[in-house]
Image (tube, rainbow, N blue to C red; front, side, top):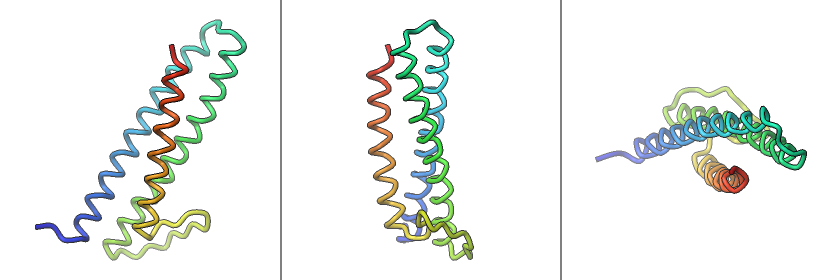
Length: 120
């Protein structure tokens, strides 16, 4: 039987794994864009490539922030003193992290769909 705290830690670990998977997928998408960059694509295609490069860069930044914040939340749940404070994003409340993770997942799915629609 698992305790509620153990369940929360399991969920946090699951999210960390998911965020790492997103990081890996973003890296592969950026590599695919690089192949187009090296080709002699039209100006219109290159504009779209730049657009996706920017979105992927931001997605990677958000993934890094989520990974860090999930780790901080796990430390707080483990009663480890956490001195990290982010004025722009809460890291110590599980429910807030859960809401942020849901938004992260939703936005990533939309990005991935757009990307797959763009790619030949």
